[in-house]
Amino acid sequence: MRAPLIAILLSTALSLPAVAAQPATPEDALRQYQQAEHDFDLERLRQVLDASFVEISPLGQVDEHDAVLSFYAPDKKVAAPPTTMDEVIVRAHGDTAVLSAQLRYVVGERAMALRLGATAKRTPQGWVLVSAQYTPIKANTPPPAH
Image 1 (cartoon, rainbow, N blue to C red):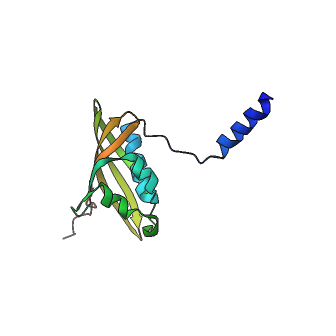
Image 2: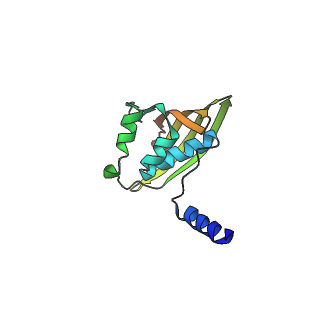
Image 3: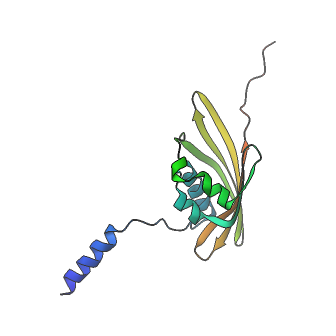
């Protein structure tokens, strides 16, 4: 009689939607945040952002937690270009960490890059972000010929 019960429990567990684990490292939190914004994954953003989260846009606009979440409502989803994150630097200090990374993407024919600075904190459930700031990286252009 145990075998059918175990089979039923397993099939039920396997049919449940997968829940992403809380980030185990500050870098995981940063990557999940960036991917969630790219994908307009509101539930993932809710899990990876601390209630005190603040974001500074590339234009210097400051947005608190709830405003940031409102930008990623399903009805506001737009197609976003593929984004690459590299040059990730993590400086952990106990239960907090300061991070920076470079985001690269292409819009039309133009390659663009941003520097993403963030602060994370460890909670009992995993790492969450408390701040993020985007800074445009000026494209290197050759000097004009004389």
